Image: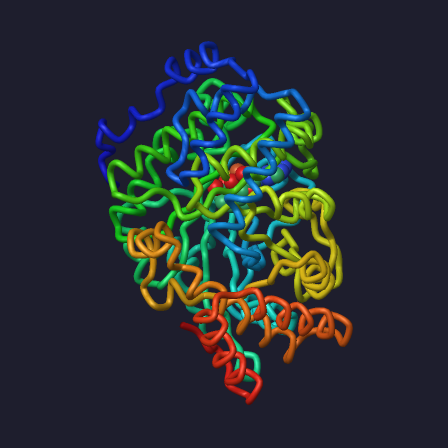
Length: 466
Ligand code: SAM
Ligand code: SF4
């Protein structure tokens, strides 16, 4: 087991957060507008500025905040939205997270760890829908073989084929690992390692994690350090909103982000914004201690977009279609779609208890059509990670705005693949019209590159990327 370096554990400064929240309550028009102007420089925001934005309540200023987030999002990410599906391989768990259906003592859930064959069947079901990126998810207890179960599962996912299709990027959301295990995860060629601190507020953390290894706050807090030390460039961060005051959580998460930036030269690749949803056998999940309203949730996304402009924001199917639609304009850059949160959920028709309730049950094709009608390009792109454009290399392209030259053509070519191979006739019609429209709006260089790639896809080539 790695010895935790003390210097890496002292980056959540509780007092500084409380002081900033107390001190920075100036939400006057002049202050807010000055902060928004600063945000347009795309260099991020300081804690005092973030705290001021949190206090906005005037509808006009809120409108200006949302508008600014929309503009920053479009400047950096354009109109693309990356699509993925979670793949739950096991709900065995030794923890007692009071908000989760998979917690050890919950007898209402049938326990199951998929075999490698069953994982392969699930992957085929996802490929059949048109997915190319999955997020492997598991509880914190592995079958007899231990951690190698996860490594084998990743191998199974990558090696499963459906015709000529295969999953091109596997991201992972599993419990904190040792440095050595993270090294093995890196060797297994994962994309992003994702881990949510759930709450940075220690007393709340101890109260909601009633048993199991997850009670070790620091082991979890330092997990992304170990992942990055092990060479995993892309890490994902997150808070489970509803457990504690969201304002505190955002400032604490910013401290975590700045710590990673200082230590590794680059911060997290993504931020997830899960909100507590009802879960079988959990009173806490149905009665969040600090519920986050829809309006505050939209504020959270907009503030994060301005505070860390180059970090992707992930929105899951926990939220309803309407809220998801609104969030695209506010800063979300990746979404899950057509999700199931029970192991075996994609290939089985019988109902198993999910980890939590979903707000968006629509199949992938319906989500894709909806997104396209709104003018966003659904992207199944996996190019950056496969070409080694991760961590600092990704940021070096993203910050001067050069990533557009890759992202937009890659989004279009992967979207075209989807339309030709998997879309319903109606989605295909809507999607092809969108592609035409987007090509006209692109810069001449990007449009030329995109057209050449689209031609290849239309003539039968697949997995065309730059
Ligand atoms: N078991 C690992 C862990 O806890 O880190 C990884 C997977 S866990 C299944 C993924 C995430 O689901 C957790 O980090 C938590 O934030 C989220 N989650 C658990 N219960 C939830 C609920 N009732 N509503 C929304 N999200 C929930
Ligand atoms: Fe287990 Fe993760 Fe659920 Fe906690 S959140 S009970 S660790 S699956």
